[in-house]
Image 1 (cartoon, one colour):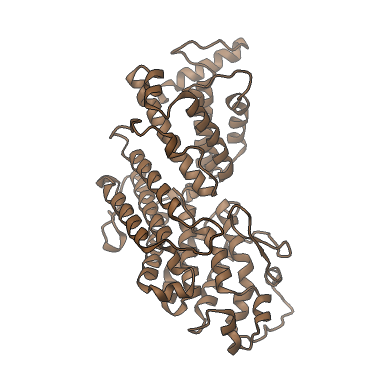
Image 2 (cartoon, helix red, strand yellow; image 1 turned 60 degrees about the vertical axis):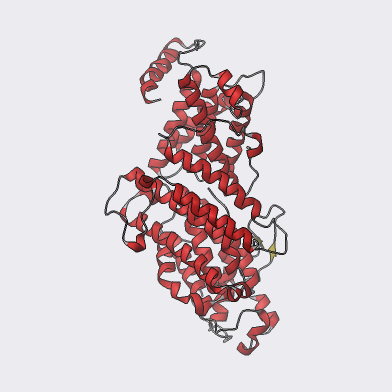
Length: 483
């Protein structure tokens, strides 16, 4: 692509001067090359500007109507396919995961139409070895992106494993990171199938299946080439400096492995009874979450990678935060020692973009819990009246009602509660309030009935929205699968 940029620019200038668009012939530049360049530049501009801006939007808007056309006998080819796939990447870096998912679905249909998912049709349609390699790489990139955005949004895959020819060639060994992501995507599908479907009474995976999936994850981790493995921070093995791109890729692979292990064992911290039934596994889940936070803190403290590409890393932070909050809610005495790690994670939350998808999801999950936790932290004593009431206190004080969407997405709170996203510094303080409120419980206060000794009735607790099981359900959407 880089070698073609001057030629593409010359093509656009000639087209502008002549006010006509020459019909491209095989092997020559044409409008679809312009689309690819515009999408690549739009992605770069969004990353550099740390968010959508007028320039990136203008680039996409100028190409999208023709690039995504599906009518009038329009014939797709690999260039068109790559441009649409890049537009999905653009939407992701704009923090628009739903649009990324939707755009990738269009690219998947283009890939199926071109037969990229079948060995015979791929080799028949692309005769030259060079073209075959490009098509193979483009298809598997799409496979990885489809997994990423389907799992990230909780919406179905556009491309299923059963539709892919088992004999379809994989990318060459010079693309080690992509090969790791392909095997990771296949592993994610196995974990996703093992997780209980939405609406079922159980939240756990049978122990024999847990052991099998844990083995598969560990096997995947050990298969990562040595130059892409992140040396464990706690063992002091992380080199003092490393190439920027390698640091990013190593960190992402490490976080992905951690996240799958969390998903497999998360049921051990989703209730007080689960924690007490298997404390070793509960501690392991929390240790994995702490490790992810430490990795992210180190990344943010030594590079600008996190702050420049928040959309890539934010889910891992929110998931780890949610694991620790749920664990402390159900077993405060056991996990109160996570305070320092949790505080470091909160510092990262304060650095997030206020308009990011992650910030909105986090606020949606915690806003209805804040008032109840603050009341319970006072051991049932009435809150002192102040002439300088914090207006945010009023927005948290409304009773909380919860309704669940049919697709298993995050619980929706009553419109009685103000949905305005607070300053990120305030949200960080709110998170610490939650941790403190959960951690100050006395042992045994894990159910609504157990709070009678505080002078609080069941109705009082319901009015402030306190129920550890409901709190757990409200935070669970933050701990979901992602690639």
